[in-house]
Length: 322
Image (cartoon, rainbow, N blue to C red; front, side, top):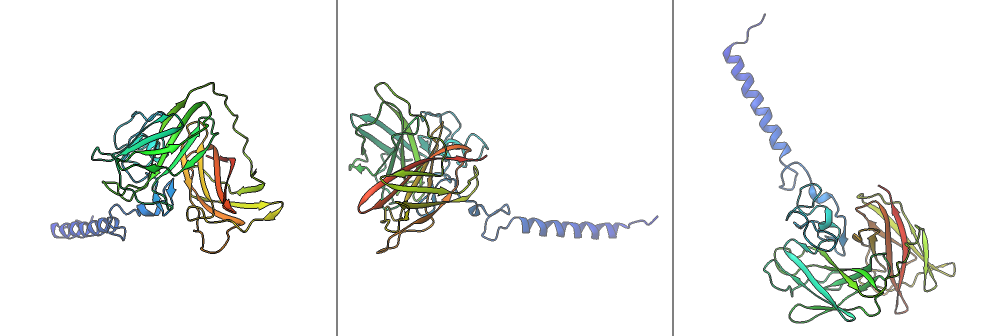
């Protein structure tokens, strides 16, 4: 039997320690100054807006119930225990996130609301996102009655969205914005609350999933098979009377605006186009959108596009596989 002398044991231990130190140093560097050996920026957000800022995904949020009330722990997404990476904070169903809070109420044919910042004051500083400081959405519980507006803010930070002729029922109101001040300055957020429109509600059945739909004489066809939580692409083609449409006009810096709502809980997703509109040229007939829908099931898609100075809205149901 070969015996290892104390001197040899000492040399072996020193060599092992050196190898371990080198290995830890290699694992601790991601090439960008980060730690943990992972490039977090390489993972796209579930809901991106306009210029690529995540719609609240990179903000520490709160897990909320359907009415915007808190049901979880501040800073947790309710699924993985990590701040702001999933759950209500990532799908527009929270009324409060990262210190920003949405409060509002229906008043006749208007919805008046404010966004409170981390300092407890009404937020009055916003950064334009796709040319607008505020994108406001309203959707009924059956995913009918879609509205997309750009309300006006008063000097005290109160926004007013005109909502005439809303059908009776339960509605969810969404505020999509980029704070210009506070700890979340520059980060996109989507906050929402529910509001009841009085009267006898008559639910509208959700149309079955389909590849195409018509609106104002235009036929819109959507191609793509997105999977829940996975980045993918949807291709939209616009035609009229069997001919490709090539005169789409710029609308919010693009040739079309696409939003989606999940059947059941009304989770929100903004599917942003992969190219901006070019000045002085018409768009179409085919447009590509980045699609990352966080949940499986049916989603109601609303495509808005403009021709001849008129805004058209086409809606269809898309099924997303698990």
